[in-house]
Length: 218
Ligand code: HEM
Image 1: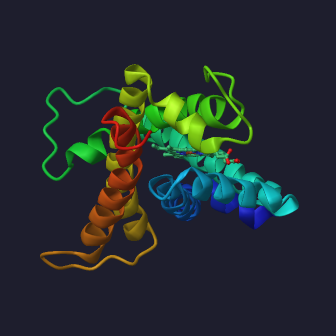
Image 2: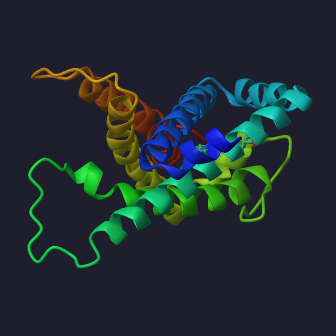
């Protein structure tokens, strides 16, 4: 226990926690995105898929608990690392002109905040129905179609998915480096993996609100 606390107390320990919990979250996001593609088969396929997930009972709750723990640890480590960085440089740079930082890395923290707000809204939208105009516990397909008929809601999802794509691009890259799996080359593996994970997840999710808005899904 003491070792675990010492590990968590170090900067490297927090980065490793971010990388490992990040892998769990990326795994969920890829699985969720693939599951959502049932929307393009038909209403029955999507509703059967959702009913199957709910029928797993205890297992679903174990997965939810694991996911929640990973998300909470990921956020706490991120906030603490930000505070440690700020404390190490209490006065901001007069001129900040990062040479290597990409747009994604500079927006990582704000992107993380947008995602946190998105997840709270999303759970109230499609899981509990609190923010949904006509929620049904059985018709998940209908919930998605009706939910995205509001242009503003669909637009919010599109923006949140762009943040997710950028977050994944930088996050996967940073995670691969933290875990020491990086390669030194002109086209390092961490860049290729991060780029493809980000593009596939972004496109797979964004397709749904866009398809509803264009009337392709109805
Ligand atoms: C266009 C994008 C998305 C769509 C259409 C979508 C759709 C849905 C739907 C329909 C549900 C309810 C499923 C059910 O009750 O059986 C759900 C649940 C959920 N979604 Fe999404 N989702 C999207 C993006 C995301 C993203 C990006 C995340 C995370 C970063 C996410 C996290 C979750 C979580 C945590 C749940 C609750 C799962 C549970 O415990 O039952 N979703 N989503």
